[in-house]
Length: 102
Image (cartoon, rainbow, N blue to C red; front, side, top):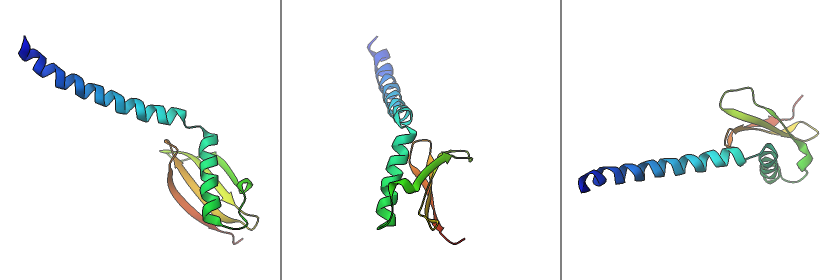
């Protein structure tokens, strides 16, 4: 009977670790709201753009590509700024600079 436990204890531990990781990743994805992401990206934009940049320069739309969730566009009155492509976990997957030329 003791030998059976030697097999099941490591297996149970492996299943518990996998479940814990799944819950952490799933909880993070569920608890991240669009507002949280837009606010975080706006903060990043303010740091990158420097003087003259305002939080109201940013707006978001739903991404059209697979694997992405949102596209946050932050641009000033001249059209200069950045497009931030956000993945399903709320992370910036890519960034494109907008040059402001018409």
